[in-house]
Image 1 (tube, one colour):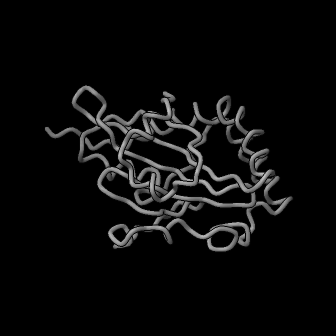
Image 2: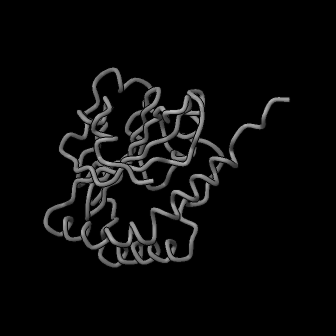
Length: 198
C-alpha cells in the first residue's frame, strides 16, 4: 500500500539529516507483519545478508522493463564506475555522525551499498549517471500491537537529464514494478518466517 509522504517525514528517522537534500519520491507499507525481533530479518531480505536472493522483480513485464533499463544504461554509459558512488558523487557514508560510523554494515546486494543501520532503520544508496538514490527501510508499529516494514525512496536527480529521466520512468514504476515488487517481498517474507514453536 502506498502511503502519504508524511508517514515518512513525521518519524524521527536519522536519514532526514543525512539526506536532507534528497527528494522523497514514494513511501510504501510493506507486507511484512512481525514483532520487534523480526527487524533483522527484514534487513537481511533487502541487503542480501541472508540466503542468496533472486531479484525482487519476478513478473515478465517488470523483468522486461529492468532489462531495457540495463541495456540503455550499457549503451549510454549510465552505469559506468565513473558515474557512481565515490566518483560522480560522494557516498552518504561521508555525512554520517560518529555514532553511525561504528561497525558500518556490509551488503551483498549488487546494486545498493549500505549506508547505515540502527535498531529499526536501514538505508542503502545507489548512484549512476541519472541520479543518486536512497532506499530507506523502517520498522514501525502497525496499529494492532505488531510491527511492519515501511519503505521510502529518496532521489537526487543529476541535472536536467536526471529530472527528465525520473519523470519518464514514473508511470512504469507504478504500472509495472511496484505492485510486483511488493507481492514478491510479501511472498519471501512469509517463506523466511521461522517455524512456529511446538
